[in-house]
Image 1 (cartoon, helix red, strand yellow):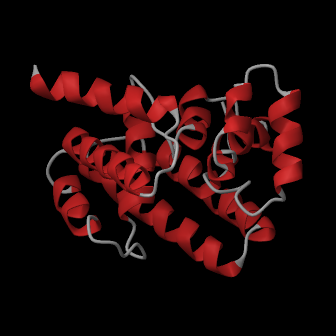
Image 2 (cartoon, rainbow, N blue to C red; image 1 turned 180 degrees about the horizontal axis):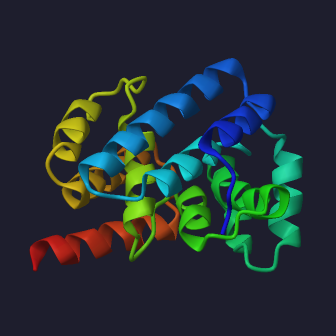
Length: 192
């Protein structure tokens, strides 16, 4: 288990991110902690994961590519998808190797914060959603996402996944399979 403080994690993120990206990370961290309070979640876990969720985001793609190729448990099919997806899985590995975080819930929340996945834990859902609805976000679907987040964590995540899929389709972009698996998982649970 990691004993890194959330403030320490934010300081480490600040060292490697642009000031604009770091401001986003601070807002996601605040949003995640607020959601954890609302849903009786683990404020420490979501705070730490949120503080490190974009740790690898501003790194050169050649660095991220080396990590994906070198790490046995990172899927190589990531290399065939948009580079925007690389920073979550690589950031999770970096959090483990550099900061010695070994809590799987925290590491998975970092790893899947962009794509989502099937059977997300509460910590994963909160970090995923906080990244989607943080106050600096400004796109047509975000208002409804925030409204849903106030009432139902699963409905809000389902909505975020649905809108992300629709957006990517409208841009004729490939969609990473984990996103479909996450969407289908929420859809099945919400319908039953």
